[in-house]
Length: 79
Image 1: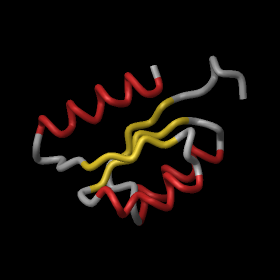
Image 2 (image 1 turned 60 degrees about the horizontal axis):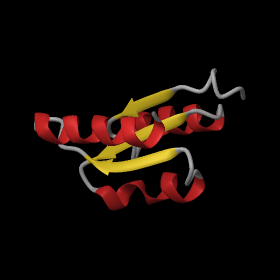
Image 3 (image 1 turned 180 degrees about the vertical axis):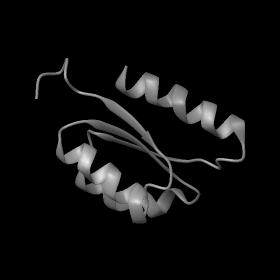
Image 4 (image 1 turned 120 degrees about the horizontal axis):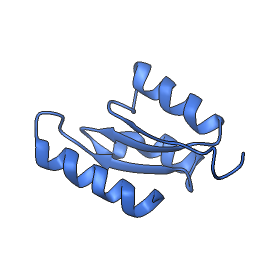
C-alpha cells in the first residue's frame, strides 16, 4: 500500500465484537488503528499481531479527557 493511501482509524471497543472486527479489517488492509478499550491489556492481541500499525490505549468514552489524550497520542504516533 502506498503511504499516501494509508489511513488511520480511531476505533473504540476494539478488544472484542464489532470493534475488534473493524480493527482487524483495517489493519489487514495495511492501515493504522488507534485501538481503544476500557482495559488496555485487552488490546494485547492487536498490539502483538500488528505492532507497527496499532496504538493501543485505554479510553473511557464517557470521559472527554481520555478521548482527547488518545487522539493527540495518535497524531504523534501516526502523523
